[in-house]
Amino acid sequence: NKAGEGKVSIKLFPAGALGKAPDQFDLAEKGIADLSYHLADYTPGRFPLTTVFSLPFMVPSGEKVAEAMWKTFQQEPKYQEEYSKVKVLALFGHPGGHFHTVSKPIRSMADFKGIKMRTANPSISKALSLWGAVPVAQPITETYQSLQLGVLDGTVLVWEGMSTFKLNEITKFTTVADLYTMPMMFVINKDVWNGLPDDVKALLESTTGLEMSKAAGKAFDDAEKPTREMTIAKGTEEIILDPAELKKMKESTIPLREEWAAEMEAKGLPGKAVLKTALGFIEEK
Image 1 (cartoon, rainbow, N blue to C red):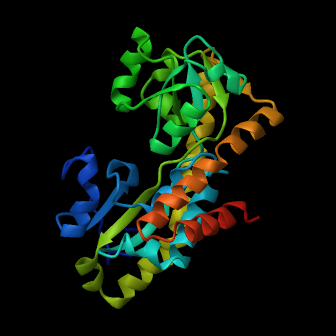
Image 2: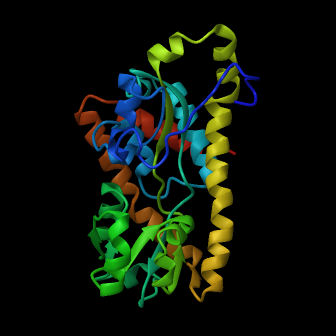
């Protein structure tokens, strides 16, 4: 709004005022909302290639994964087709989620055996199963009670989420892993975009895209530090895995990447190419 000097006015409708969380992309696509913020995991199957960033250990940081998401989108035509009915303004994710447990600390892969762990997505469920844990899919809003009653032994989540949902009142151990992110997007209705004056389009083009994607990722990064410090101050033990143990965990999930690529190829999508592109941008210095 400020940069537009009165030419652009954005009105926010928080707390699902225009629709439920899984409906947010549809709101922008159908023109019910001009702009929308959506999480790809809320609509399974709709953004298949986007889920490359839901695979384990694809998250150096929120800012870096956002950069990789945008650059992969720019480079891969089939990836772009997943968003063909809207104009994409930004693609981003949060920094890596960690393992948070109530009574049993995770110090090695062997410690996962039998642990009932709330999972983040199907790829993370497969990783947890590989390590001997029991993945449990449930809404985050139910996790507090599940941890409290012993239905769950732990959860995978970012530091900020632990504070937001007050789960750090119950868990006592956090094993740092940078395990996963949730791909997110900021999109605008195509007709709305096409109807904007050229100078407003130019303004939005100059402040969105890679710039906005990285800024959103960095905002998530910045939010992690105070919530991490607060959680540790409350008595949570932060566990840093031995580098060799973490390497072993990462290597154990490489077949999951290959499996994902094969599943995409079976659907007629360029899974191998997108995985290679995504990894290239993630590892880019």
